[in-house]
Image (cartoon, rainbow, N blue to C red; front, side, top):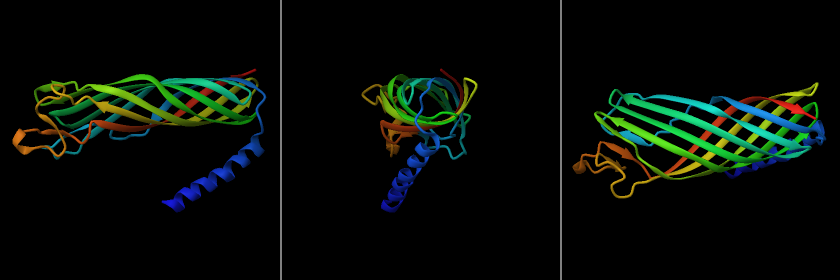
Length: 223
């Protein structure tokens, strides 16, 4: 692990001087708009049906966008992303989640005709809604906390006052399941479940950590 960390740090030391030398400091004012076109397919589910052995089907869809205003080499932005996640374990166990995340971003940019922008964002609002269908029972566990941050980078090509943009964004999200008294149905339990309690649906922890990642495309205007 220490060797890998050292290699990553060395790569950053080498990469940034190359980018600065190749692109140079930006003197343009830019307005940039990006939208996600694809998201990493991951299992974001919370619950597990302990009585099922079938292979789950996972569907992830995302919508949203980012807006940035850069004055020369520094700027601010706002990003909203809605991810809809569905996991079907079998005909009786379906978990659906809608995750809305809003980020306030700080961005830095270099370059004129070819540019590189990078930055970070802080989660400034959002919500997580989950519903679980298990046989004839439908429940909606509540989340009482949502926080997180993100990192991103964007490559741009400039010509005649317009830019074409390609970006990649990674969001690190923390959520907490409200497992206080009477908030979780009796057939659910924290893993490992107690077989004497007939808890056929389990969850490992009320503390939930998610990592979502999107490839983004966009356009920009320069002044």
